Image 1: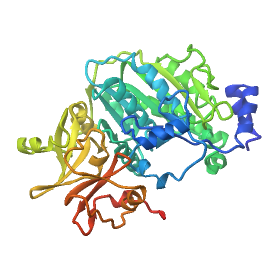
Image 2: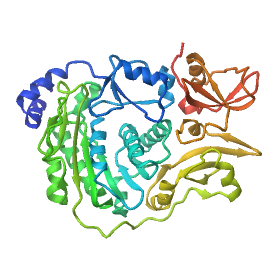
Image 3: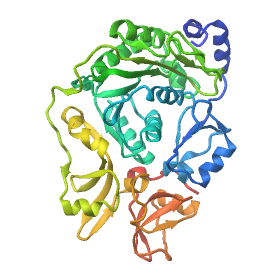
Image 4: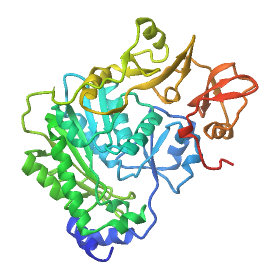
Length: 460
């Protein structure tokens, strides 16, 4: 198959000479890269930075010489980094270039429309914090319920409470007229950029599938277009190479939706990134990563302003009392409001809280803010997510530094003993980063690490 129609599609997209280089590279092993969490630095990640090559378009991106067993690295479970293809990080570069041109009167509202498993979401969140502080809302959406659960888990590990996770079809966002300032649509595609990682991607490739994906991508963009504000930015991306899903769809966005292309006349980036008619293409053999296409557009068509239509309110969170709010401020002391979902207290950043009722009126909100815990009597049983949030106070519970083997035993949910630690709830810390909580009883510890997050492989 790779010697047939795919070759023609690749040559059409990037030229014959470039395609020959890429075609040869598809027989070589896939690259390995990670992106560091700038809000969870520690000695281990700093050492990793000195030992690895930096991704040219991401100052937090690192290309590794080999693939370690990430599952057996406690820093992976602490959210110190995200395993992400270096080519995929180029979307974050385009996003950062566009950030300066959007100046909303209130918090910046961003939508990651097809967000699972969360690589681009966490990249966007880090960039937004660096530029906007806490003055933003990032909605990360995934239509498939199971994948939305994975997305929510990865957002929790990353530790940013300004991200709201939803699970809706793109057409649901049409009810949010002019709501978002920037939309990233990393649309489902034929997956040519996955050929070196996934044999099924090769087996499933066909001309019919390319055509099917191209049509689906247009439908997704058309369905969400109403939610983008006038003057807002659309970033369109795929992990495939052919022009049917890339430049031809970009041309459709311009001709049918009246968008202004922002990357059409931009200069070549260098570092092996190929300039196409409307955007950029990253192809194995030219870059160290696997594959990505990205283009950006400005919405010119006028809308009447942010408004909501359709749907009924589905609030799942209720306000807390003034006394409870004062108690909860010790866990999240700055710029947070507090709500209760079932029995769990939730801390929600002001920027997200101001929009949450709007989102819940027409979307299925999977996760918002950060879970603090459940109150039982005079005690608050802390939620595992709070240990992972870089916005939570680390002064409330005593911290117990542990070695790598003890950290892995905690993550495996094995019995651990902390004879020298204070009694009660304590935070397990590895390499200066929190991993989670236990209740230390002296002769044993009750683990608060969620069963769903425990390491299932042998840690010996």
